[in-house]
Amino acid sequence: AGNKVLPLRSNIEAISEFVYYQIAPHFHSEAKEKGQVVIIGGENYGQGSSREHAALAPRYLGVRAKVAKSFARIHKANLCNFGILPLTFQDAADYQHLNKGAKVVFQDIRNRIENGDTEIPMEVNGQRIVTLLDVSQRQRQALLAGGTLNLVKRELEASSGQ
Image (tube, rainbow, N blue to C red; front, top):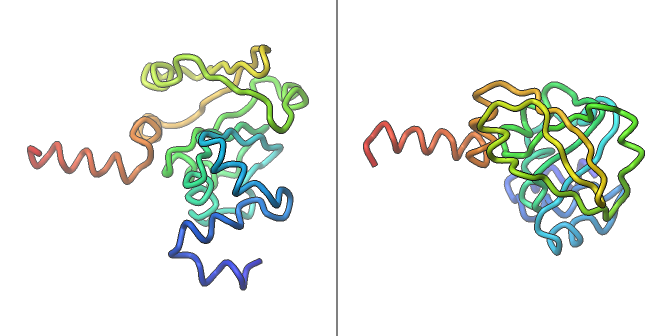
């Protein structure tokens, strides 16, 4: 897909059509239809996906959280930069309880992030699963703002008195 996708790097709408297309050809249309999406991943999720588009394009499609057994370092940072929660399973065995189309609900997520909570529970089809948010305070601020660009914009506006 590289030679098809590379020319699209400045067209987020077009590049988003290729998000997960090799493993889920209809992800693009399904994600746009649902509006808010949670992605589930395995070990070292995002390895080889260090480009910012690996976070930016899913965010454009409505991905708001990724829950994985572990994350590749750069991808985790990029997720925070684009306002996507990088959560890990407290118990890796919980990975087995999630299936495509499962209903995922986070209760009081904004307050948990603001309060510096590490444990972020989610309800999946009525079952409680605990995830962990292991990020810096600055990354928490970026997540709360919807991404680093929004955070910096707010900071600049505040410092200029707007």
